[in-house]
Amino acid sequence: MIKNSRWAEIRESKSVMTHDQVKISYDHYKANHKKVIVIAHGFFNSKQSFLLQSLGKELIEDYDVVLLDFRGHGKSGGFFYWTTKEHVDLIAVLEILKKDYDNIGIVGFSLGGSTSIIAANKTDLIDTLVCVGSPCDFDKIEYHVWDMDIENDILYNLTEEGKVGKGVRPGPFWLKKEKPIDCVDCLKCPILFLHGEKDWLIRPKHSRNLYKKANTKKDIVTFKDGPHAEYLLRENKNKKKVVDLVRSWLKETLT
Image 1 (spheres, one colour):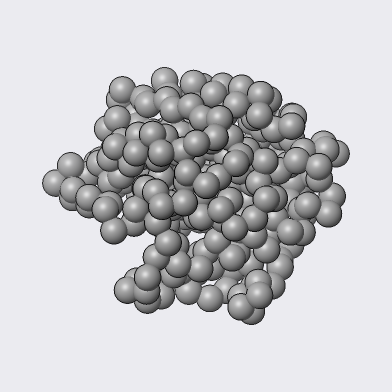
Image 2 (cartoon, one colour):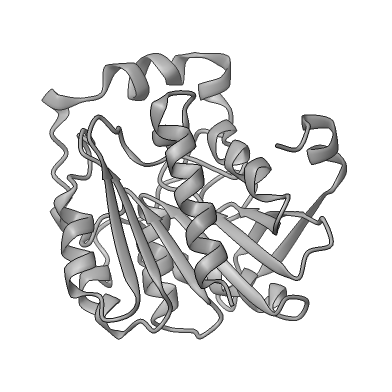
């Protein structure tokens, strides 16, 4: 894995304006590869997330890497629209990247994965997709607070590492949302679904439903004791398996 000093040296911080005039911030890590991977964060996260950065460092040996802030998060402008408009942010970044890369892959976490599915239904710029702990329908997220993951969602987020990059500027949540489950069957790009069986927030059935309906090349892997989305990347028995699965999928499908 690339050293932290080298990771910082190859970063170029940039921004792009969406068609609805929201400034989207993204970090472009350039290692002179011909293919690029975009890492899309979920709710209350950002491109500064330690765990998402750690994935980028794992992938940089084979791909250039981009981490973006969706609207209402990090250094991007605007407010978070709860997956109603965020696909616009992703497509704006993809259109910039397509000028320099032959192939683009996305690894999306939680709502970032759902947003990526919606975006893939509106553009042909995505060549392969990995969705980690992503809901098939925003309105069907269970929110079983009594099952909350104390270790990851509370204790970890109180540490200096866990607090990095967290926050959101929420916008209206009542607007009509496009459902990933309604468009995943139209996608042409390959899709890998990863999900923790102990995900208290977004139950594994979401990924199973998406996998079942997808008509393209696809695969699904669940983790018996796995937590929600990016927490699968914490230094535990799941991280290596997640990274290996992502690498293998990208190697096989990003062509």
